[in-house]
Image (tube, rainbow, N blue to C red; front, side):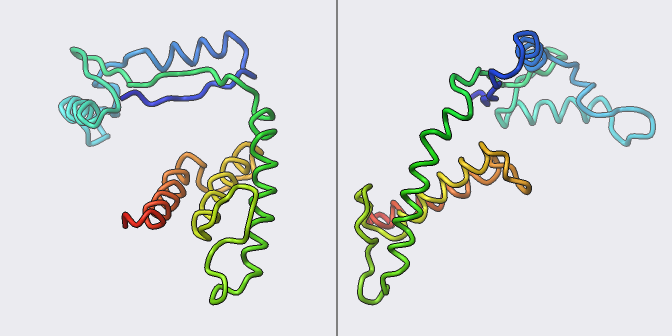
Length: 169
């Protein structure tokens, strides 16, 4: 399964092509690790690392070369276009979450009525987290872990909540 790397349309055609070419270029397996005299690594170590990366799905070994399994793709829309869809949904979800938080849980364990029809407090919260993560990433506001690192954790939280809501967990 290839890893997809988005290439923004804001880059020139030459820069996009250079990035694509670089990602598709193979490297000698012995170049994957510094196998110099003081490095502590050998050519055999580099080959073993390449074979491990191959088995893990990060690339493929072809003779003495290693190729990343990467599929560069152009982003079809500008980031502002993405925010045009995400920002209003975030605003509405934040309003729904605020209304839900004002309800005493003991008296009203479900989410407050909202335009999305989401009745579970947990699902409402987790959907909000997914969209907030995307919005903050698109605005360049994430200074710690990149969204690509955080997204699987947020998605896992949403998945667990959905399974719980469905009685499957």
